[in-house]
Image 1 (cartoon, rainbow, N blue to C red):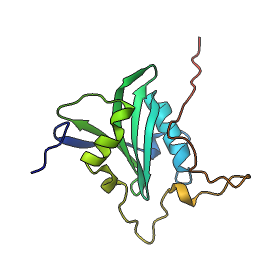
Image 2: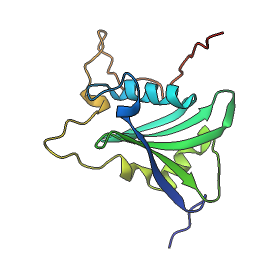
Image 3: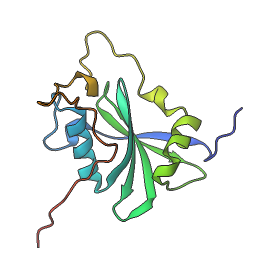
Length: 148
């Protein structure tokens, strides 16, 4: 059995996009991720897309070593939390190591049934200057205004 650097990984569903205000079946992957980051009050420090979802590392603003891993499954429109037995938090420099060591892309590379319409980054319209919508940086910053 191969050893993994951060111990056993557990995956737990946390919520579906139907619980996020303003998000629906026609929302783009970017709208969904922005809403997720807003709801979790964090920053998406790293994001990796697959044909059927995304792997997300969020951190608390101002604390780059507070990262937590999440998966978004576009087939079920559900977010999942990933936890590791030997590590509670991560920083962005560990993203690639965790993704490779735990083969996280297998969760976002699942084939889509023919009758489903997945929320894929490459299915969105092109921007007016010909830039493809998934040519955005890997970090999503969400500004929140707090009422006084």
